[in-house]
Image (cartoon, rainbow, N blue to C red; front, side, top):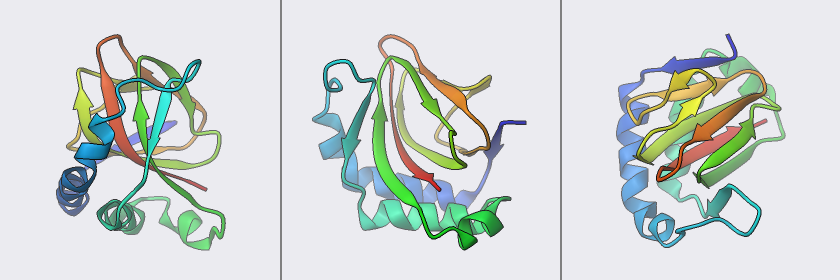
Length: 136
């Protein structure tokens, strides 16, 4: 399976705290740069802490722990498809307006997602997803 949805109360709770610290900057981005489907914000300490919890909980944490090349980002996905998972990726949605899917899985803020192979994060028109993302 290329995408696994994971339930972790502490990741979800920390994700909610993270959203409260980045909500204002994320809401200021109403559309991506021309020709893009992703906007970028600066992750806060609370974003990093949520991802640290996900790394500890994730089934693939051995790979994460050994990796020296990690990229943590706070991304806003807009309508269109965004390719994710070219390398192993953890996605913690912290706010969703409308709906979205990673591969065949409808995503929500009550899970985080292990993306193990290349797939599409699909955001329909009138929707928007703010997520903490870690790739390695």
